[in-house]
Amino acid sequence: MRPIDETKVRWEVTLAHSASVSDLRTAVKSNNGRNPCVIGLRSICWKTFLLFKGTDQSAWTKTLSDSRSAYTSLKEHFLKNIKNPDDLLADDPLTDTETSPWNTLRLDEELRAEIFQDVERCMPENLYFREPSTQNMLLDILFIYCKLNRDIGYRQGMHEVLAPIIWVVSRDAIDPASLGTEHPALDEIVISNLDNNYVEHDAFTLFGAIMQTAKTFYEMSSTNEPTISGLPNNSPIVERSKRIHENYLHHADPELAEHLTAIEILPQIFLIRWVRLLFGREFPFEDVLALWDILFAEDPTLELVDLISVSMLFAHTVAATRSRLFRGFDAITAIPCASTSSWTAYLCK
Image 1: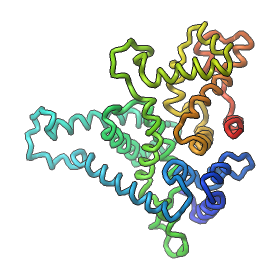
Image 2: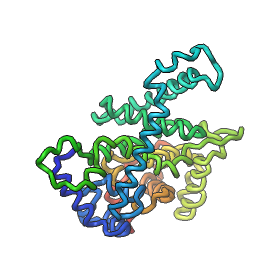
Image 3: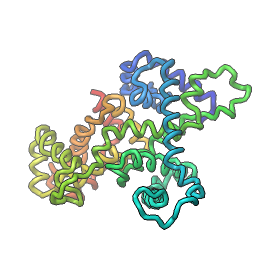
Image 4: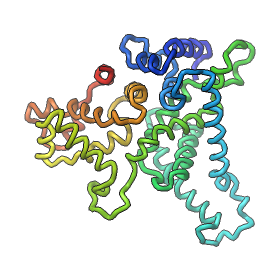
């Protein structure tokens, strides 16, 4: 968390660009050093693009109040037996029927153990993600999301989409209990939007908004089609990878598309990671946040991901392809990608 005085300045900077969503979008895409995601409050910008869908501050508090109340209810419901297993003592723990609360508890514990394996490995270089409180937030949010989306369940990589969201919300948060009498005039809307007590709630809601589209990146086919790289040939992410390669890339650069085909590099081998993680492993962390700023501002539905993937293929392969050094999959990831300063400039055109 930042000092309160700095947060107040950042809030005012953000609002100065928020006469409308269009104005905020333009400011976020600007390269004049006045980007409100950088010098303002990134979490407010993301909430505006993904949740509020408007800049009427009077409606922000109601939207957050409703979403926070909903998450509180979900958490109480799905974690009831996890947090209070003694309440199940009246039931037979040896019962193995699908409706048995003991069976549900065992399955829930298995799911949480699976999720926690990834949570423990999440961003090991960042001490914030080594803190037990942060890991508990990641675990509970992902667990509740999976309980609500049983058709998908948990898929590896979801934690890497959630982690930057928690970081951004917590970075901007303020602790109302620490304000004291030094900031008596601090706007209640500011306190409500940035309340540290609701970092987990707001992160869950933002994650859910992103996953409305990103969910398809993790879907598996229900048929018994042959698999490619462990995925059914007709799974949505494989189909999307084919579309990026065969349609968009072929249209933009037929030579590069045909070259990838000729050396038998399946597009899903690298595109699955790019798309599922929203390019989270392809840039330094701060650059990923900058890329997400533009993505959420320009296209909350994430359709722009396909075109970013095509642009990344250019950045990764054009030099090697033209110099006849491009021979296989390793070459795609071996060439350093351009920094996001050039990416944001490209996306803002």
